[in-house]
Length: 482
Image (cartoon, rainbow, N blue to C red; front, top):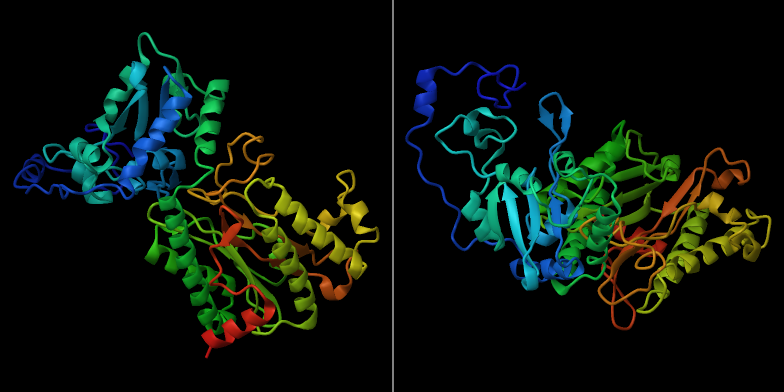
């Protein structure tokens, strides 16, 4: 609830504050400045990013909000993560960034001046620091003051309360990253205006090619994810005994993600048996059947918000059955064909088409597809998709489905360039109630997903530390379970 006298965001069970206590709380606090040399990680990269955005929109004001807190239940908010475009332009990635807004003000021939509108530290002279559950330092932790935020980022700062003044009186042409902060949308009269859609597209497209520092951050995310997969295998004996073993697996991986980074890149998928046929199975409420497979799709997000996205399908017994191996090897062959198609100048869709050709030919060889693979692959047919359905990969970066607002000619219908990072993840999802399948194949769900960066002459497998072949997986699991 909001306190009727102070306007503070207080909880319904808070005790009243006496004048004596209020006066006492306002005295005798030591200064606690941030170290003078604190900078956001990768500090020297961000001016160049802002300059590239500035060059795309000369003479126009650009408004990029971090986003707002969202209520989870009653007076408890979800954990906050700033919008990826805001993080990419400022380097600010923490939970203290809620409500903040980056504005690039047109500055004539010089391009733009960035101004960061922030909610600074609560002064000890008022009650916010100990009474406001949403923003008070005693409740949610310290925020930088205006000077400290400028020091961290190299960007001029202004109080968030001053933001509204920008949107009164004569206005320069303005573009807003709409849909990120409802208060900013209301203040600027925004929605889905074409100019705002173009800003979102350009912000995505500028992130398609990663610089060296970004690739290093992504490799760090992958390395921590590999460790998380090892943790899961070591935990399998306990998880197999638990009545909700999928949740146990989820918890084991998520512990590693929180210990080493900001958390998971997305909600962990821990799918046993036929649950693996549900593409985004996140209920994770099932037991583990030792005779079935476990599809684990999980990734660690670094503190700088770069995401890994890896999937392995593991035999819970430690050994693939002949039928499981048959299906697994088909998906592996499809993934290998997709990886082989990655190179600068290749069309983005080429690797998916290469993988799907292998899948369709395999299904035809099994007799599951009752038409030739070539016919099934025709765009006017596509019957093989009953068993595989979704695409075979996506860009990867600050979002695990990165750069999704990019225009088709730059992404889905574009060509690959060195520095692009993406996943290759074909799968087979053989539904348990699919009467077109022989009984032994029903309920098998298999996906193999790896993260790769396009190089000058091909692609580098960033997740090579995790085994891909069935024999290597069996040997890896046996070693970890010794």
